[in-house]
Amino acid sequence: MKQRGAIGWAGTVVVNALLGYVGVLPLGLFVNAVVNTVGVWLGWAEPDLKFGNDGVDFAVALSAFLGLGFAAIFWTVNFWLSRLTKLRGPVFWWVAVVVAVLPTVVALAAPRGWAAVSWL
Image 1 (cartoon, helix red, strand yellow):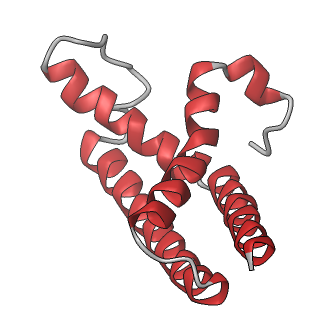
Image 2 (tube, rainbow, N blue to C red; image 1 turned 120 degrees about the horizontal axis):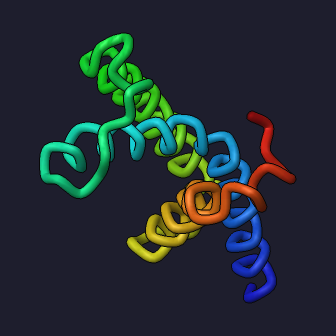
Protein backbone atom coordinates (compact mmCIF):
# COMPACT_ATOMS: atom_id res chain seq x y z
CA MET A 1 0.00 0.00 0.00
CA LYS A 2 2.88 2.39 0.69
CA GLN A 3 4.21 1.81 -2.82
CA ARG A 4 0.91 2.96 -4.31
CA GLY A 5 1.07 6.17 -2.28
CA ALA A 6 4.65 6.79 -3.40
CA ILE A 7 3.66 6.28 -7.03
CA GLY A 8 0.75 8.70 -6.53
CA TRP A 9 3.02 11.38 -5.08
CA ALA A 10 5.58 10.86 -7.85
CA GLY A 11 2.82 11.18 -10.43
CA THR A 12 1.58 14.33 -8.75
CA VAL A 13 5.05 15.88 -8.88
CA VAL A 14 5.61 14.93 -12.53
CA VAL A 15 2.20 16.12 -13.75
CA ASN A 16 2.47 19.42 -11.88
CA ALA A 17 6.04 19.98 -13.06
CA LEU A 18 4.78 19.65 -16.63
CA LEU A 19 1.89 21.99 -15.86
CA GLY A 20 4.37 24.43 -14.31
CA TYR A 21 6.58 24.30 -17.39
CA VAL A 22 3.60 25.26 -19.55
CA GLY A 23 2.45 27.77 -16.94
CA VAL A 24 5.61 29.87 -17.08
CA LEU A 25 4.09 32.09 -19.77
CA PRO A 26 0.79 32.99 -18.03
CA LEU A 27 2.35 33.18 -14.57
CA GLY A 28 5.27 35.24 -15.87
CA LEU A 29 2.90 37.64 -17.62
CA PHE A 30 0.87 37.94 -14.43
CA VAL A 31 3.98 38.76 -12.39
CA ASN A 32 5.06 41.28 -15.05
CA ALA A 33 1.64 42.95 -14.99
CA VAL A 34 1.68 43.21 -11.19
CA VAL A 35 5.20 44.62 -11.13
CA ASN A 36 4.43 47.15 -13.86
CA THR A 37 1.21 48.35 -12.28
CA VAL A 38 1.22 47.93 -8.52
CA GLY A 39 5.03 47.94 -8.26
CA VAL A 40 5.32 51.21 -10.18
CA TRP A 41 2.43 52.82 -8.28
CA LEU A 42 4.09 51.95 -4.97
CA GLY A 43 7.50 53.09 -6.19
CA TRP A 44 9.08 49.62 -5.96
CA ALA A 45 9.85 49.33 -9.67
CA GLU A 46 10.79 51.51 -12.60
CA PRO A 47 8.14 51.77 -15.33
CA ASP A 48 8.78 49.57 -18.36
CA LEU A 49 8.14 51.66 -21.46
CA LYS A 50 7.31 48.57 -23.55
CA PHE A 51 4.60 47.56 -21.08
CA GLY A 52 2.36 50.56 -21.68
CA ASN A 53 2.55 50.73 -25.48
CA ASP A 54 -0.71 48.84 -26.00
CA GLY A 55 -2.18 50.22 -22.82
CA VAL A 56 -2.01 48.96 -19.28
CA ASP A 57 -5.57 47.68 -19.49
CA PHE A 58 -4.69 45.35 -22.35
CA ALA A 59 -1.68 43.91 -20.52
CA VAL A 60 -3.61 43.37 -17.30
CA ALA A 61 -6.59 41.85 -19.14
CA LEU A 62 -4.36 39.51 -21.16
CA SER A 63 -2.45 38.34 -18.10
CA ALA A 64 -5.69 37.87 -16.14
CA PHE A 65 -7.26 35.90 -19.00
CA LEU A 66 -4.24 33.62 -19.38
CA GLY A 67 -3.84 33.29 -15.61
CA LEU A 68 -7.46 32.29 -15.10
CA GLY A 69 -7.24 29.85 -18.00
CA PHE A 70 -4.14 28.27 -16.48
CA ALA A 71 -5.83 28.12 -13.07
CA ALA A 72 -8.83 26.34 -14.60
CA ILE A 73 -6.59 23.79 -16.32
CA PHE A 74 -4.52 23.36 -13.15
CA TRP A 75 -7.61 22.77 -11.01
CA THR A 76 -9.22 20.35 -13.47
CA VAL A 77 -6.09 18.25 -13.93
CA ASN A 78 -5.37 18.11 -10.20
CA PHE A 79 -8.99 17.38 -9.30
CA TRP A 80 -8.92 14.27 -11.48
CA LEU A 81 -5.38 13.41 -10.42
CA SER A 82 -6.39 13.45 -6.76
CA ARG A 83 -9.30 11.14 -7.53
CA LEU A 84 -7.11 8.81 -9.58
CA THR A 85 -4.29 8.60 -7.02
CA LYS A 86 -6.65 8.70 -4.00
CA LEU A 87 -4.55 11.50 -2.48
CA ARG A 88 -6.71 14.06 -0.74
CA GLY A 89 -6.48 17.04 1.52
CA PRO A 90 -4.54 20.24 1.78
CA VAL A 91 -1.14 18.54 1.55
CA PHE A 92 -1.94 17.32 -1.97
CA TRP A 93 -2.98 20.79 -3.09
CA TRP A 94 0.00 22.52 -1.46
CA VAL A 95 2.42 20.12 -3.14
CA ALA A 96 0.65 20.64 -6.48
CA VAL A 97 0.79 24.44 -6.21
CA VAL A 98 4.43 24.56 -5.09
CA VAL A 99 5.60 22.21 -7.83
CA ALA A 100 3.58 24.04 -10.50
CA VAL A 101 4.89 27.47 -9.49
CA LEU A 102 8.51 26.35 -9.14
CA PRO A 103 9.38 26.62 -12.88
CA THR A 104 8.13 30.22 -12.92
CA VAL A 105 10.23 31.05 -9.86
CA VAL A 106 13.28 29.51 -11.54
CA ALA A 107 12.56 31.40 -14.77
CA LEU A 108 12.28 34.72 -12.94
CA ALA A 109 15.24 34.14 -10.60
CA ALA A 110 17.66 32.69 -13.15
CA PRO A 111 16.63 33.69 -16.67
CA ARG A 112 19.91 32.49 -18.18
CA GLY A 113 19.52 29.02 -16.73
CA TRP A 114 15.91 28.93 -17.82
CA ALA A 115 16.91 29.76 -21.42
CA ALA A 116 18.56 26.33 -21.69
CA VAL A 117 15.24 24.50 -21.20
CA SER A 118 12.83 27.20 -22.32
CA TRP A 119 10.28 26.77 -25.07
CA LEU A 120 9.82 30.53 -25.42
